Length: 225
Image (tube, rainbow, N blue to C red; front, side, top):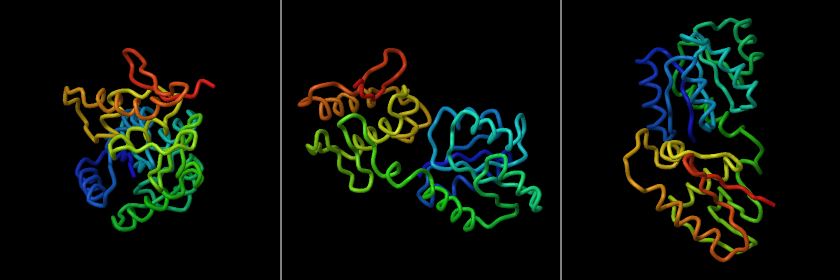
């Protein structure tokens, strides 16, 4: 699971993201509403944890704007404002859950896990399809026209991310952060090598290409029909 934490209290955010990572959850952090909105728009997350009172743009404004842009990622609102009216306002703004401060991390973790399971339908969560290419996240099987394609773990993660974002340009930065968990460019050709291997495996013995290189931008997997 990958989540975004938007929290301006740097000490609280550092504790929270460290605890999430220890629980096996990849956690990105933004310290204000504007940068949080940018990350939430440019990247794909399973859950967002958003503080209500933020600098530059408040948390409810961030959520409302995400929903306007068609981003339906489950959102858990954190806030020192814990009255019934405050919770109702947060949920009506587009939040999926509301946890008043102070809170126990064990409860926050449990709520995030529930929201992560709730995202999408089981079919959407477990199986991705692009044309005649199918990836099953549960069994880790990849097939094209019914023929099984064997992938290495990193190749599987790469294909999974590309198919999750089918029809959209996926940049090198997005791949580094979401497939390799790098938050910097190590200046290697690791992405090019893996994309080349993946392309060979999913296209070599089939009629039409699916994985495209978008010059100067990144990669896209798409069925042209």
